[in-house]
Image (tube, rainbow, N blue to C red; front, side, top):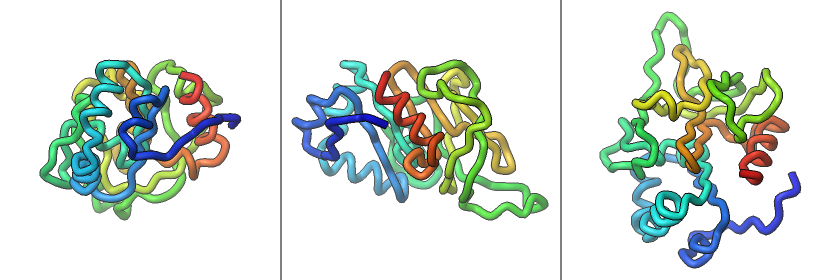
Length: 182
């Protein structure tokens, strides 16, 4: 996608000088928050994202960590998105197996530079929990797994994607390209 100078780091000085941030995540909510807390990154992330308004994109668990809390654990999240993370509990008649794993279409709810792309876009999901927004204006896109659920969030410079753009072929690459231009 033509993005240069991408650095993977948990170094506070590198993060402090970043023009954009990605918060990836795989695993459980409490473990993810513990990792951020134990590494001492929460204060620098708060400064960059809340004070300096540096764009950030949370991916999968990274999106869930943007919320206030999760049913998956006891720790508080970053609280940047007015939402909580809840477990899928599909109707048994639908015969859906949790986790939601595979390709699914999304429905964009409002124009946004992150989702400036052709319609009928589909993405790769692997998750047992989803974000439930208390402020629906922060829900950028939805998908369906027995219920409609928020699969992308946005509040000012804060963005999140429940799906894995890095595994979502041209559609995911377009999201990452769009983020690089924000």
